Length: 225
Image 1 (tube, one colour):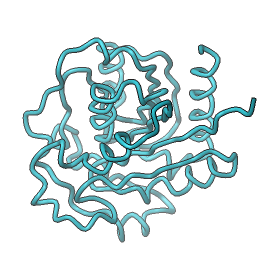
Image 2: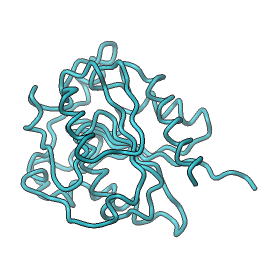
Image 3: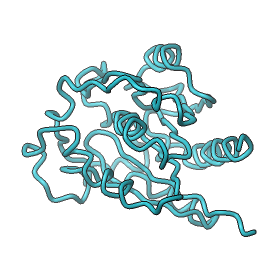
């Protein structure tokens, strides 16, 4: 029987859009993986005014629509960056049966609550230095909607632990500090942890290494099933 094609769904961080995954998307598609790069509401190419996005459910509406419309037996691998980790956890609580694995890349990973964009020590969590991609980022980063992050907490439930999780640490991160990442790992230990010698945006600075870890993560869940 022909093996099922892996479907990666990529979720950006605060102020970014699906465009930030362009290098990773190209690498995955070369291996015949399916890749969907979501623009959350008021972000990326989505035309909504961020100031009109009031709830976390509304912010995640494009992503909810995608997961809701998967075929009955289809599962995806979720990959979230930075504040996009909140969206991954939200999806785990709502759509556990649709998710093969959730991979947090330098991302917020809290079982029941949020780290908001304001909680990052260096201010806006996703506006770090991108090296050769700084010009692209300067053209495409836009103010993100802050209101959806205010005061929201995830519900208790067994489904939160039913999905395998992988965390990819960024050891040279000046935005989400190493100690912040370690604290989240202790509070809600994932199935597997990788470490990148990278800044906050490994999809720009170390894309081939991040790509390799994504493949290792996907292989680990396949081996366990």
